[in-house]
Amino acid sequence: MITLQESNSWLTHSWQRSQAAGLLRDSTPELIKVDRSELQSNQHHARELINACETAALPLFIQAMAHSASRLILADPQGMILGSWGQEHFSKRLVDIALEPGVFWQEQHKGTNAIGTALSEQSLVTILGDQHFLHQNKFLSCTAHPIFDSTGQLVGVIDVTTEQAIHQYDTQLLVRQIAQCIENQLMIESPSAFYQMKVAIDPKLLTSGWQGLVIADSNQKIIACNRTAQRLYPKRSILGSQLSELTGLEDMLNFKGPEFDASNTLYFELTQQRQQNSHVKARPAPIEKPSHSYSRDDNLQRSFEQALCVIDEDIPLLIYGESGVGKEHFVRNLHQQSERANQALVAINCGALSSNLIESELFGYVDGAFTGAKRNGSKGKIRQAQQGILFLDEIGDLPLSAQTRLLRVLQERELSPLGSEQSYPVDIRIVAATHTSLEKLCEQGLFREDLFFRLCGLQLELPALRDRSDLEAMVTDVFNKHSHISQVLEPELKRQLIEYHWPGNIRQLQSLLQTACVLTRHKASLTWQDLPKHQQDLITNQAQNKVSKNHLEDEMSLAIKRCYQQHRGNISQTAKALGIGRSTLYRKIKRFEIKLE
Image (tube, rainbow, N blue to C red):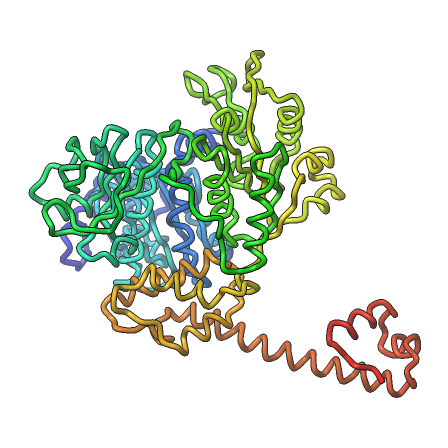
C-alpha cells in the first residue's frame, strides 16, 4: 500500500509503477547488469553521446560541484549507466547500491529513482531521500533530465546524484543547463551541419549557454534546432525551412553579426561550418584567415609563431601543457592558419578510449573485424584526416600496440584497417599533445622511443594560466562572455581570481565564471559572496596555504643562513649540519635567493 504523502502526481504514479513491478520497499532488487564486453560495446556505440557529455557537460559539473559528495551519471534510453564522473570516495559507496556503469536503473528494476523516473516521465525530476521507493537508496538525492537529439528522439538521460538532503533550485538549473549543453553539442557535431545560428532576445545571451541553436545544411535548409529556438519562434515551423526565412539574409557568407532577424524581434549570430564525415568533429571553417596574432601573452604568442613555421612542412609538432591550458584551441587556430585550413582537422583524445577500442577508432576496421563491429566497417580517424591535420591529444596514454601501428603508418605513409589486407595512402600532418613527460614514459618502457623521436620535430610548452602575463585580461574576457549585458565583476573578487593558482587552468576559469554568472543572472554585479561555497573554499584554502608556505620558506631560509654563519662559510659543514647534501644545499640557496656573506 502506498504511504507516500507527496502531492506530486508524477511521483505517486512512479511509486504505483514500482509496486506493479513487484518491488518491496525494504527488499534488495535483483541486479540487472551487462558484462564487461557488452558494456564496452554499448559505450562504443554511444561514443558520440559520451563525447558530447565529456566535452560540453563535464567541465561545468566539475566546477559547479567540486569537492562535494556528488556524481555526474550518464545513462542510455534503456536506463543502463554508460559513464559516471565525480568524487571517488562517493563512488565507492555507490557500488554498494550498484550505481555504476553497466547497471540498469529503470523503474521496473530499481523503483522510483531519478534516472528511471526521468525516462518514464521524459522530463526533469528530482528524487530526494525517502522519495526513493527502495529504502536502500534513501541516502541519495538525485536530479535527472532526459536528453533528446535534433529529431526529438530520446537518446539518454543525465543525472546529478549527491548525499545532500535536498537539491536546491540551483542544482536543478545546473542539470537543465548540462542537458542543453549535451543536446547542443550533438547538434553541432551532426555530419550534415554546415551553418550554425545562435538566437536570443538579447545579444549578451548569445553565449550564455541558454541561447537558441539552429543548424542548417550546405543548402541552407534547417535540419535541427533546440527547444529554446522552438520557443523563440512559437508561430513558425523551423525544421525544413530555409535560413533566409529566419534571418532575412540572402548572402550568408558576408554576414557580420550579431543583428536582428527577419522579424526584427530576436538577435542572431551565424557561423559557417565545414561539412565533414560523421566521425569527424565539426570545426568552424574560417571565411577568411585570422590574424597571426594569437595571444597577448608573449611566451604563448612566440610558441604560436614557431608552430606556424613548421605546420606546413613535413615536421611533426609535440605540445606539452597542463590539462586545461587550451591545447586543442591552440591547434584549432593553427589549423586555420595552415595551408590545410580547407581540409579536415580530426581530433582524438587517446586517454578517453579503452585500449581495445582506440585502435579501431584510429586505424578503422572492416565488416566482421571484431565482435560489435559496424556492418559497413569504419574509416578511422587517420583516414578521415587525409590531406588534413590529425591531432592526438594525451598521446602518452596511447597503448603500446597502437604505438607500434602508428609508427608504421608514419614510416610507410600507408595504413591497413583492422581485419583488412588492403593498404591506403596517408597524407597527414601530425600534432600530438600531452601533460606528461614522454621521455620519462620512454624510460619506464611505457612509450616507444622511436615513436617519440618521430613525433618531436618541434616541442612546445604552453604556459599554465597562472603563469600567463594576460591573466587579468583573460578573467575579464571570460566574465564578459558569460555575464549579462550590464553585470560587472566586483574589483575585490577580480583580484582574488587573478591571485588564484588555477590548477584546472582555462577550463576551470571558464566553468567557474559560467556557473557563477548563471546563478546570478539577475544581479547587477558578481561578488565574492555570490560564489558557491565550495568555490570560495578552493580560493581561500589556496591563499592560506600560500601564506603558510611563504612562512615556512622564510624559516628555512633563516635557518640555512644561521647555520652557514655558525660554520664560518663552510658549505660542506653547513650541509652536514643540516642533514642534506651539498647539491641540495646549493639548490635551496638558489631557490630562496639567499645572499651568503
